[in-house]
Length: 78
Image (cartoon, rainbow, N blue to C red; front, side, top):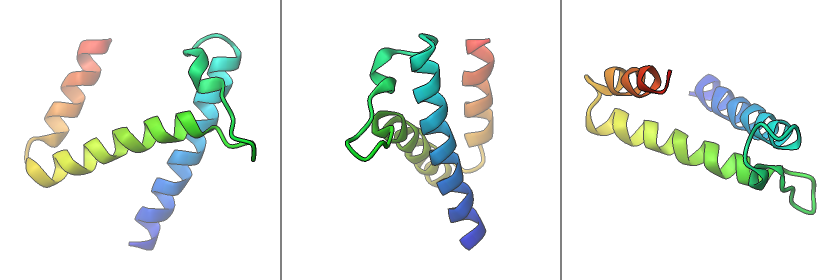
């Protein structure tokens, strides 16, 4: 359980910073370039958290098909 939570924390940190840097390079929407007064890219972290929550809910509701759903969405985007 600790490893899973640590992995989620690390992922949220890295995706928030990645979206922030992409916004600075104009490769992501400018809204991701906002920082809190403490220097935290809160918009990227909130969006990443929302997608993480969607994954958790899908895993709870349809555990047998969640992998197929996620890979289908990624394949359509490519």
